[in-house]
Length: 161
Image 1 (cartoon, one colour):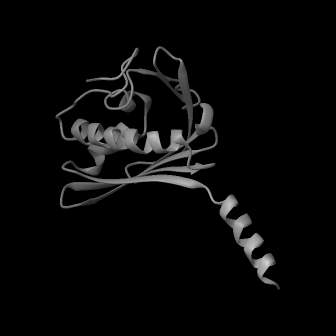
Image 2 (tube, helix red, strand yellow):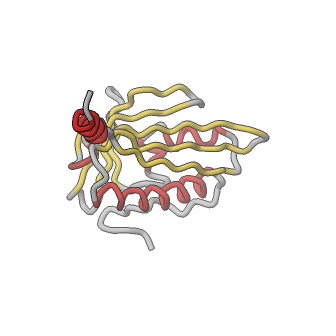
């Protein structure tokens, strides 16, 4: 196999890669207090967005931002209380077919939450913006679990201050 074939094979492998946003945060609360915040629409309203609609028959959650100019449709793909919550994003520009993975582990009444927004098609400007947004959202999730709730980052018509 020649060098050109190796280079083009390497470039093809690079193009097939997907991008992930990964955060990890220590929370001073047991996993049982964290899990409801990551596994339901009502939990999302405490730290992510004020405009959340949950279809209890399907489990699908709609997260509306900026007066519903953007709406993310999330379908639960795995929920094993209190070990993991996984969501498939079914709508929302670059979010379609990405996954939200929440994996809490507990030691000594503290929870380490590993969060991954997986399967982005590319590292776009939106990807880099959401990397920063998820960092802020993890801090709000931590505050909600610890009883120091800051409320959702996304209000119905804008961002919280």
